[in-house]
Length: 93
View (tube, rainbow, N blue to C red):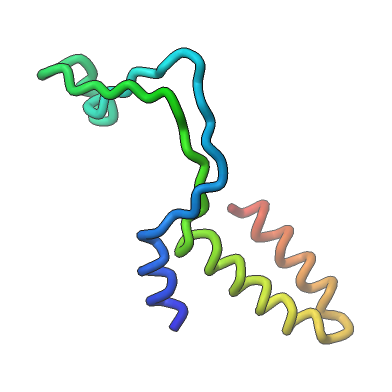
């Protein structure tokens, strides 16, 4: 059930905050491919940015990690193991 939740949730974003920029920023979609300025002027002017959480990439995995951490933390020595595993994963990532 988690895999479909992650896959389908990846299509949905939960907006958190809208950030408005005073000077609009010109965005050229061809610049990603190293073709900025080539071809017709297909530039978009963006004056705002939306900060959002992806359901399948953030919310579902966070809930899964919290669920697993709760079950691991029930054991006596598991608190240290969970802390060390979290630190190692953070450093590696």
